Length: 239
Image: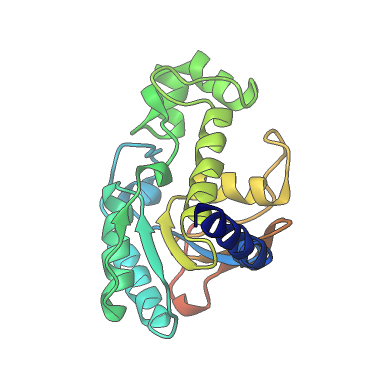
């Protein structure tokens, strides 16, 4: 009897194994779509203050931008919705998700770069109060670490890790993320395999729609900097 049971189980394994590998191949080959959204314009965006992990409320125009995006998003179906836990991103996610009944789950990996001692200052204030740090920040490459903050390389590794983790968690899904200009820039470089020290020649606009896709072979850039929904509303590029 035991021999018969063993032979039966072996037969079942032989029969099912090809189907298992076929299932895994189909599962792994599913395309995962990610829509990246930069938060609406903030009061500090308007006056040129660097935010980082510090926060600033949305400006009236930033609220209007997010509301306009929310109306556009009503026509799309997302399986999952995440936001940076910083206030400006969460407020944007509420305005964007509201018309569709979407509520964003906070995801700390989507935070802006930690700028340490430079946060809350504009460029002129940095040059006066932290001239050496500001100079190194601008000129010493991606491995320079702002005191109490992140180096650009550390930040980019965090951002690429975040989208890889979410794409793996929700393989084959359609995901929307509300985040920050710096995060968009890091992901753009990652998807296109651009050097971290290359000049930026792409936009990072408030309340823009930016679409990427993970396929079996890697990442594709689908579209970038789409602000058609803003119409007469202007939008700022990241600093």
